[in-house]
Length: 132
Image: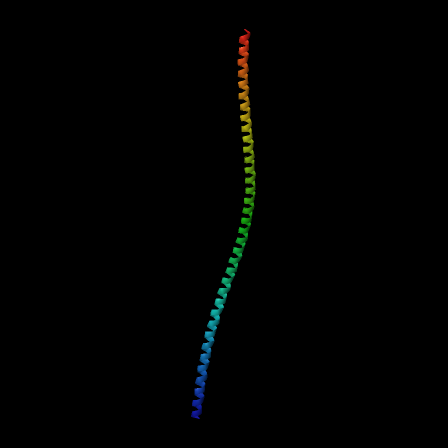
C-alpha cells in the first residue's frame, strides 16, 4: 500500500502542479484579455477622436470652398466693373481728344478770321485814306 500511496501522492502532486500551472495560465490569459480590452477601448476612443477631426476638417473644407466660390464671384464682378470703368475712361479720353481737336480747329478759324479782320481793317483804312 505504501507504493500505491506514493503513486497516489505523486499523481496528486502532479495534478496540483498542473492545477497551479492552469491557474497561472488563466491569470496570464486574464491579464492579456484585460490588456487587449484596454487597448481596444483606447483605439476606439482614438478612432472616435479621429472621426471627429475628419468631420471638422470636412466642415472646414466645405466652408473654405464656399468662401473661395464667393471670392471668385466677387472677383468676377470686380473684373466686370473694372472693364466697364476702363471702357468709360477710354470713351471719355476719346471724347476729350475730339473736343481738343475741335478746340484746335476753332482756334485756327478764329486766327484766320482775326487775320481776315485785320486785313479788311487795313484795306478799309487804306480805302478810307484814299477816299480822304
